Structure formats: C-alpha cells, structure tokens
Image (tube, rainbow, N blue to C red):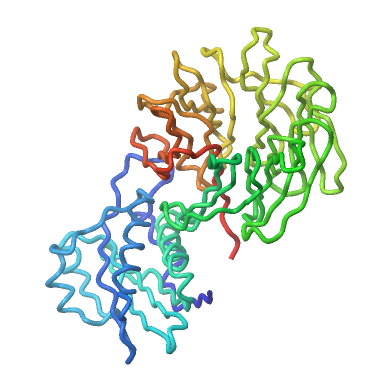
Length: 433
C-alpha cells in the first residue's frame, strides 16, 4: 500500500480543537462523512464506495472520540457541494458538524485496486486539516480505511488511533488451543497456528511483527516464535519443564519468561544472545511477568505472601527480588495476570471478588485499585490497547468464553468474539509502516 501526503494545513488542530487525553469526560467531536465520490470512467459494480464509508464510520465511532452526524442533517448541503475541495464552513457548522470528511475514489483497470483521496476539514476553525491519498489492492481495503481513521484521531489528540491494531487470542479446538488474529473492529478473523496441540499465552513483539507463545507440540511446554503471516517460526527456548508466560521488553532486547528448571516456577530474563538471568529466588511460585514501558520494572504474580494466595508484586528488572519488591494487590485472596499500561501509570489484573473474577486496575500514582468490570460474569486476562485507553479481557458466562473490549473509565463493554471459545487475548502494539 502506497501513501502520499497531499497537504497538511497544520500538524495538529488548534489547541481549542484538541482533546486532552486525560479528560475523558469531554464531549465527543461531531463529524460528518459525506458519500464517497467515484471518479474516472470505471464503474463501481462491487459497491466499494459504500462499503469503505461504513468501515471508516465504524472505526471513528469505535475510537470513542467522535459522534457521527446523521445523513438527513446534511443531505441538502452535501448535494450543493459536489466537489470535495469546496467547503462552506459556516453552513456545515449550522447543520451541527464540527469536523468533515470528504472522499474521492477511483477503481483501477482490471480490478487491480483502488485509489482513495481523503480530505479532513475543521468547520469550527474554518481550516483544512489533512489530505491523504492511498493506492491499495482490494485485499487491503480495510487496512486503508483503518489507517486513515488513525490519522484522523492523531489530528485530534496528537496520538495515533488504534483502528489498525489487532488482537491475538487462543481458541479452543478439538485437538487443543490454536492462536487466532482479529482486527480491532471484529473483522478479518484468521487462524495463525495449526499445531493441533495445547498452546498458551500469546504475546506480541513491540514492533508488531512476531508473536511468542508456549506450545506443547514437541510434548514439552516450549517457547515458540511465529511471524504474523504464519510462514516463519522457530523454537525460541526449550528446556525440560515449563517455558512459559513470555513478555517482550519494550526495546525488544530481552524476554521475561517463567521457567521451572529449578523445581519451582521462577521469573527469568532471556537476552538476545539466548543467555538466561534469574530474577526471582523464592520457594513459592512466581509467574506472569509484565514490563513497565520504560523497561525498568517488572510486575509479576507470586504467592510469596505466605497465605497460599497469589498477589501482584513489582520488582526491579535488573536486580529482581534481591532488591526491593513491592506488593500492590490487597483485599482479595486471588490476583493474577498483571498487565502494565502503555502510559506506565496503571496495572490491570485479574482479581477474585466474591465467587467471580473481575478486572481491577491499580493506579501507581494514588496506590489504589478499583474494580472496572461490572457485568454478571467472570472476567480475566486483561491486555491494554497501545494508546492506553482500552482493555480487552476474557469474559465467561454460562460456560462460554468470549473477548470483550472496554474503555477505561466506562462501564460499557463491546463483545469482540462470539465463538464461545476465546482465551488469553493480547493486544498488538502499533504496526510500523
């Protein structure tokens, strides 16, 4: 896919048009998206214009930064402005639009792809914000729209959107558990592994190109690395016993993992030269490491409190538990699956509340935890979106396991999978273009 910058009136909208990422209570921006205009002599027999408009609308809605202005409010005005480069800012403000997207597209000969030209306008401040042209093959249609949606979010917030991200997860199959990938919007589900065995704990590399996981394919829980096309794979670590719970360091130079080589589950560091360094030295079980964004700390699960119940702790990533270890979970007899937020100020984890599991989030500034899931089911295994605004987790109701996405600060969750067999979600980082 080829991307060419047409024009950018400003790198970002003016400060009054921006949304502070820390103020989630601020109103959403009302955006109008006109019908995509077909250019050239080729006809759109496949209805690509309508399909791609729906994708863009959904992406912006799911970002939870925007509310869509409905077609009846601006139909007459749209008909009066057939050109995508002519804008009556005053009239668009009067119909309720704060931002506006106009799009032209053409279909290439022999069905070899499409060219999209997007223009984003700020009706409030009377300015052209962004122009992008994409040339894409038909199999990259969704990626094209996801990418532009993320550009729109960046114009508003200064931070890239997450429409182009993916979630890896495990699905229960007859012969075990296999890894699947799915887009943030719930489309493009595809199977990544065909191991026909038990697989565990998929984890993304920070560059979004690889997934590491534990596989029993060789009759031992080995650590496997596979690329996102499923074509390249290698055994990353194989010792007798457990090789599990991998977590890549932010700089991609090291992997935290759990080994049972010492007759007990301990946290280790595996560096790029395949050298091992032991971080925990306790007779109780230590597992589930997760890195802080700066790579200086690791949160992990341990039952070292002496109560026989797992809790969440933080240790130095170089000195391990031979230095200071801080417990952060209290008030529950069972806490597990810590996940450090990309912003570095929060840790999500599984916590048993009564007879069910819930997702809690610990704030490293206030040193307090709060339960963020409110449904009637059990919710476990949280993972953060790369912008730190959403979490995904496994929900269980009536022996069905599915994945749910929830914005932090909201009580509303969106169901992502519907197979009843989803486990261990892992949200990708931003993909490098």
